[in-house]
Length: 259
Image (cartoon, rainbow, N blue to C red; front, top):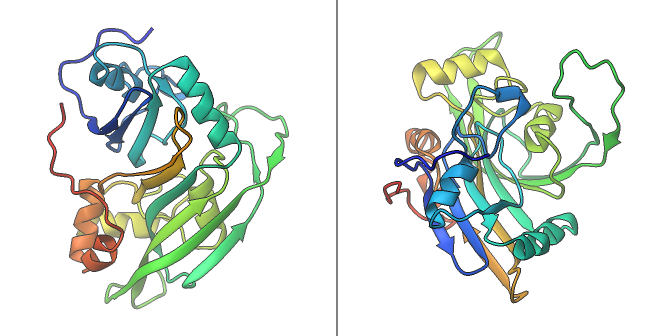
């Protein structure tokens, strides 16, 4: 049960046609009900229904609660099936932006299988391992004269990431694996850097789903949708002079009020 549709809607409509609805999801909002957050009563699925005239919509992918950005819903079960097939066949090109600790290589490929994560921390079963690969580019870098741990300075970078699967926390776990964890990542990040950024700049997970290219579920034509950066990400981009690197991506501005 979705419950009543709230009057205030934090989603921003980015695109809509007869087949699909694309929105900007802010950080902190669950896509749908989760056994981990049983106390929550409002979800992106519920708000998207509000943008769809009160009619049901069908999620075809998900974003973690602290991740902001592009979220796509189908407007019918048939279109949901088509979109889900595109995701499963890896016909969807996904671009995420992340701000990370350290200076990664200009380009790279991460091939690191991931074990399924149980939602029950007391679950002692050995869960299966799944293939997981992610390509990345480093878009901008900065060195700050702030000492952390044993280092007299701190290095951070803006990255574009392209996961080829949709494993749970894939990007967050892959970046931890290559020792460039995402700022603000409580579970997979580094506490000293998270606290530094929150104290001096901004808080929140510095990860966003920024762009997707996929075949339209009704026509089959390739289409590209983009989402604006969340305010906490944009603030850090502005503070560190990375506006030009982000502008080159052609993302829409976050200047539309929520409905």
